[in-house]
Each structure stands twice: as structure tokens, then as C-alpha cells.
Length: 511
Image (cartoon, rainbow, N blue to C red; front, side, top):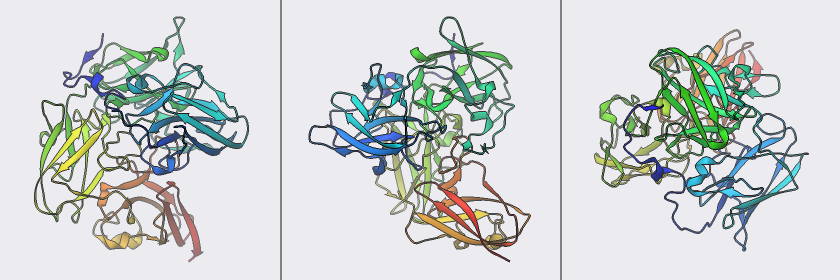
């Protein structure tokens, strides 16, 4: 028996994908997934994921895939489709070959998982009217779950540092879907079960609140998350970096009050799970505004952050803002759920006015205001949208990049190298994509650093997230800084590619 943490204030059924899709015919379509490259490969808002439109209403794209590619380097890829760059218009794998599921049922469907037989060009064709797709030449679709893993902060004794195994980057130990300690055992009734020691003082913030995701066949992109407001229900296709992005689809988050051994039992084909003894679940009961638009900026539990819900299900917050407020006139904010970061923040994914609830590639909202005054921000969780009245001036692209860290050249910035708004931290670029900075370093010194964008301080930071399993810059949250162990004295070039997420350090000359 599952007992709720908070009363249900929003009927979750009204929030499931497709509930507010409307009748707009698809004028464009997107293919997202590990078949793509770069930071935005799971992002339907990104124009680079668009498919070519055809007169018969179908869409297609051709991509080069490799038998040694994919998340685990085994030629196994994951993908799904969207139309009109709308999170609510997602198409995931159906039960019949070539079939897709959209609308409310898409929460209970997963990504398309397939393996390519050889390196080559593969054409994806998508027919949204018929909810079908094809891949040519033929690939091997994988639909049977052979193993199941639980990854995340439920493994209190495991490490949080990303590692490299000689072939590829793997997630931090807690989130590594290949760890034997993460494996479920299959029961004779077809369910899967694992026993874990959980504590009232455990979890990411040592407060008994745990966050985790499930993976199948050791593939984090064959993932399962949860549906807020529906305790015990799983949402398909939700891996660490492959979350759909709908507000109500979350990691599996719960609170433990009593320390002990807990059974987690899963029926993946039925998209449901149980935890015994019972734990407490969050219910999507309330929303907050966070950031430098409110007091105690990044504390979602602060009562001053709470939004007010009206009779139509919209949430509002009046903000008193100044034209020179925030960080040198730039405000940074996001939304949180039930006053807890364990449910992850809600920001935007590249299209102003639309929300994105998908670690690790989610941005904070960055904007200026034209004049001092009161501004009301409105969140529509059912449609996944937000708005400001009167309008603000959004900042939606990286215009500049800064690097901060414990470098000797930054010692005079007033914060020991960690003052990103000081001009000395600015990087150089010739194309707006690849940014560089030359720094003199001392051999034998360990340097730590982060990138930030648009001179917005820590409102837009880019760091390699230790939990996603990729060596790639991501803007979500506040992960640990990057580390560089300098081998010898000299001048080094630090590089960051804001589109692909690649970064590196290169020795230019000895000193």
C-alpha cells in the first residue's frame, strides 16, 4: 500500500502526454535520440533534429550509424519522434512492428531500440497520420527485456564521480547501468525485484529523499521514470538524458522515514512498480518560482517562492523586478515542484514560452525587463508553457562564454577566480560556437573550473554532468567543477564547443 506525501491538487490524467495536443496538422517533425550527435540530440525544439517533409505527409532523414556506435558502443541506438516541436506530440514505440504510440498512452510506451548490422547510411521514414515508421536498410529491433537495473541515489555507498573505462565515458558509479549491484532478479511471476538498504538520512541530500531511474538491458536510454501524482506508475523512455521533458514525468522520487531493507518490485510490461515497506511519494501538488527574481533565490522550500493556482489550473506569481536587477540587468529563474530539487527543476529547452523538464540539457530562463515594475509569470503545467505579463526580453542564445576557476590569472577577480561576471573571464570565438581561452598554468597543480554563458553569473553554467555517461557539457543544475591536473608549466588553450558540448585542454607551449 503506497501512502502519499502530499494531497493531490492536480488531476494527473489531465497532464499526460497528448492531453492538450490540439488538432494542428504537423507542419514539421523531429527525430531525436542517440542516433543524433551533440548536446541537443534528445531535444525536439532543436531545428537540427528536423526531418525533411514530403508531399504525402511523411517525413524522412538519413543518418550515418555505426556498428560500434550508440550509448554502449555496440551498435544499439534509441530514438523517438515528435511533430510541430511539441513535447505533447511525441511518438514512441508501439506493440506492433513499425507502429507508434502517441497521445495519452505515450507515457506507457518506450523508445525505439534497435541495432544496426553494419556501418552505413540509414533512412528513417515517419508517417504521423498513420503512426508508423520504417528504417532502411533493415535493422534489428529489440523489444525483449533481458535484464533490469535501478540507477541513482538509492545506492548510498557508491561513488558520484564520472569515470572512463578506456573505451568510453561511463556515468558515476551510482548511475552506471552496468554495475552488478544495480541488477534486479526476475521472479517466476514475470516481475523483477531488488532489495536495497535505504535510510532516513540517506539519498542525495542526506534527508531520506531518494531519486532513481530504471534501465533495461544495461541501456540507460531504455529507461523508466515515474509519473507524479500517480504513485506506482512508470513512464517509458525516460533515461537520465532521454527524458521526454513533460512536467509530470519525473525520475522515481520518494521519501523514506524508517531506515531498513526495502523491496522494489517492477512489472515493466505493465509500467508499474511497488516499494515495500511503503514509502512516501510526491504528488505534483504545487509549483514554485526560483532564482534571483525572489528572496533566498535557489531554495525551493522557501515559502516566498510558492505560486498561486487559479480555478483553471494555471499557476501565477507576481514578481517585483528592476531594469538593473538580477546579475547586471539579467534575471535567471526556473520552476520547481513540491519545493524539492529531487523532482528536478523546470526550465526551457530552447524555445521561449515552452517548458522543458529534462536533466541534464535544460536551461534556466534568462531575461531582462524593460522597466521597473510588477511582472506576473504564469505556468501552465498541462500544456507545458509559461508566459510573462507584461512581456520580458528573453535571452535564448549563447552570446558569450566565460571560464572561471582557481587559475592564477583570475586571482584578482575578487572571488578567488570564481567571479564569472568579471571581464577577465571572457573567452574568445570567431564563429559563436567554439570558444577558447589561453591560460598560463603551473605543473603539478590541480585546477578546477566551470564555464558560464552571457555574463549571467551562475544562471547559465555549463559543466560535464557526472551522471549522464557522456563527456559533454550540460547546462542543468550545479554539478561539480571540471578538473585538470596540469602535467607541466606552460600556456594552455581551454576549448568549449557550445553546440556539440565537446571541451578540452591543449598545451600550446612550454614555459
